[in-house]
Length: 607
View 1 (cartoon, rainbow, N blue to C red):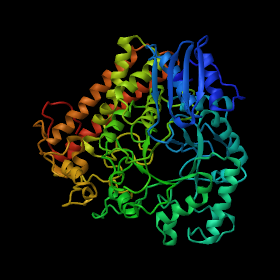
View 2 (view 1 turned 60 degrees about the vertical axis):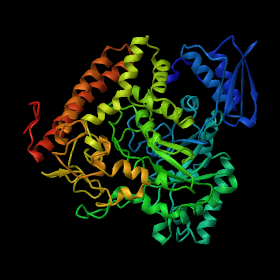
View 3 (view 1 turned 180 degrees about the vertical axis):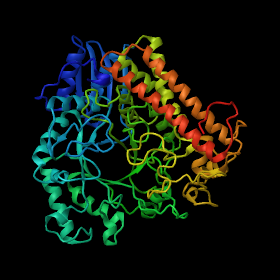
View 4 (view 1 turned 90 degrees about the vertical axis):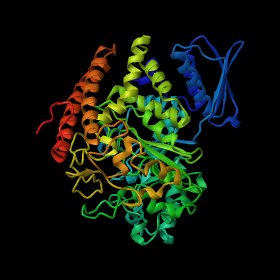
């Protein structure tokens, strides 16, 4: 199923070899009888301009810009709205990346849409026609880099650089006419498997091995975007084993790929994952800054540090990572997560672009050079498990192209292209999509608290699931108070921010309510800005979240979704409603038992 391109029912022939070929084919099929000329202007790069001319339309653009312009014209025409006589656009970020966490056994780490689109049983295993359909989806919303394997590199994925390279090159050839470049996740310690006695980035034999490997890989895939690396994190090998820092490790790899125009994308997800819960000095959100900020300006110009948007790990609500604000002399990418690891597993509805727009409102212009997102794709017929989760993939593409994109406009555009409802039903659908993140937040994580999920799979309520575990994810709720003091008087995490951010969050009286318990430890009697006590606000949010989920399910049931989407949507809405009640009851009971405070409205809280 083609998601927002479901009206493009034809398959793309395998003999189209360039973005211009694909553009012509798609235009001829989507807009038959309309005269459209393509004018390649390499000065426009990935940008394009579209003009109505006497004979029809003219699209001008660089090599890939012609294809982006073609899809822009097609999508505007399919939306049913009047197409402007003249429009143009160019991407804000040169690299607009999707990170797939696919393993070669066919599983996907944190995957909620079926098995891998690329692999099965340790081998490449894909339908070429479906790969072209996937490429169409990604290109139509402006994405241009696809990392196909998990950042936790497991055998035999390392063989992508070795005997599986010809098959990888064949896959790259399928995506190339759509302007999409492949990227591979690599194991930092791989030289050890090839007779090199060390993986020390300063060792000449290690550097030579990576140079030779890069030359071989780029000989097969000349337009490979580069390598993605997770090092010294959650058991992954890295330069710390040799007394080196991460600039040393990243720059060694960057040296190997630089002659071929390649990038090293280096993830900044490094922290102590063996923390003792009795340790009150270590504060996990501080980790990224402590490992990387002092290295600002020491990374090669073809290294990109990929920084998670928040300092924890894709929680429902986190402040912007201070690392994205504090490294002014280093290439940075912000990492988002389309896969709903902590936001409902693509069962619960959670539209992400309102969250992303909040993050970008705090991010100064020109601070990052690219965007990356953990994929929500899989082998399910609808690609994203929940048909409505496709809104996150589409709007991510729009955001990566233009970070100022309006959330409501983007979601409305997706809904119109995907379902073509009458105006009243379209308004209902976009309204519930835009409200879904806040609804989910209400019945799950109160006031900036994180990690109240079941350990390991991260689905469903468990307020103390990680409280005495190794991962540094504590809320320390007791009978008196809850939350972590991250001000100067506490862990000092807030000191990593610029002054204007510290001023925004350091006083609990002025700190935004929804971040209150992320930055402060407060008694249940603390008065919120609207006069309610904090414990009453927790109760109210959870009861409201459950009630709003009931309304959400009723609205979804009344909308005229086509099959098979309808059956999947209604089944998942039923599951979400069950989950929302579990969250509401368990979290409210948890805090009621601790605080001993009754609900002011007399609603049922179980003893």
